[in-house]
Length: 381
Ligand SMILES: *[C@@H]1O[C@H](CO)[C@@H](O)[C@H](O)[C@H]1NC(C)=O
Ligand SMILES: *[C@@H]1O[C@H](CO)[C@@H](O)[C@H](O)[C@H]1NC(C)=O
Ligand SMILES: *[C@@H]1O[C@H](CO)[C@@H](O)[C@H](O)[C@H]1NC(C)=O
Ligand SMILES: *[C@@H]1O[C@H](CO)[C@@H](O)[C@H](O)[C@H]1NC(C)=O
Image 1 (cartoon, helix red, strand yellow):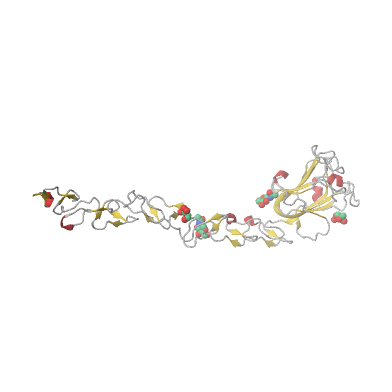
Image 2: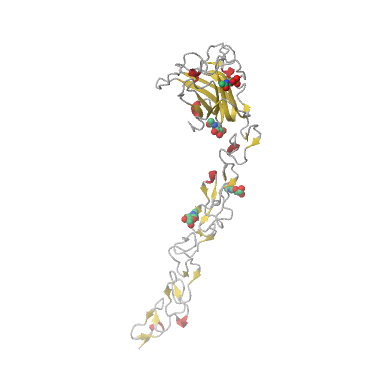
């Protein structure tokens, strides 16, 4: 059961309620679990007939349930989910002054507001084990500012509960009138039901008395849902954090979309996705160098090739050819002694026009053996 104690114990003894609102129960369909008699003038509808000046058994204005029952249940169907403020109950008195003869039957009653005919599905507006004899008084006003469709009156006498001595043995619906005051259209509030709930209230529902929202649509917060989510938050109750949006980091307060693209390394509407392999930078718009040693593996934030550069390329991003005189992986080898001081092949280091005299080998890095000299070490001493 939801929020069991939301408005339990908020009973105000009937006194001087000058509250307006509409009696939403008047002439609505009503039901009770057991009837006092089949062809009775005590049907469930008597509690919503608008009449309770004669609260005597035969006054023809009160609902009465069957005798000798361990449970009593009555409900009215308000027709749709409405915004309730408070409920008045006028119990049977037989027109005697309070405390009349029936408070011991009334004692221990429950009132629920539900969206189904099941009281267990609803809010418990009121329940109290009376501790004081001669209570409750026959006129009750129960504050229950919730939204719902059915108002259910219920009472029971259970075997496993020890009740105060003044409790009756059996329970009865002896409801001369049940009035349910509130606003017929949920998105309005105030005594005259003419004030629209604030526009960002979730499902346009608000407190019937204060107009404060019962929840906000995504992107807004505050009692009247008038504040957009603060910087870097969005969504329902502003509980979601923006992704890695660029610039100020702000995102759309409702759906989290980044307004100006993503920071380095992130992509997607909300910048919550890492760059796919081969991409880096703001919104992952740049390609990793094609000269990374491990093809297309680069740091998604700054483009640094992971595993260094292919032969012939240098710098962290491997986008620069080797300087003259250098070659190989990450350009970290030096050319041999190429003829005419020419640059070697930057990838594999071969000298394109042979070696300077005194050197040999593909890379011209082998000094002629003792006794040999000159081009290709062909000269013999
Ligand atoms: C009834 O349903 C409305 C939504 O349609 C919800 O706001 C309200 O809290 C529900 N009431 C109860 C008593 O469950
Ligand atoms: C109970 O309500 C009836 C009907 O409105 C009223 O006449 C009566 O004075 C009330 N009794 C008490 C004790 O407030
Ligand atoms: C998010 O909201 C903005 C602003 O209303 C809109 O332009 C954008 O298309 C929305 N994005 C998505 C994914 O719905
Ligand atoms: C967002 O930025 C944080 C901090 O710089 C980083 O740890 C995280 O991986 C980033 N997320 C994405 C999807 O880029």
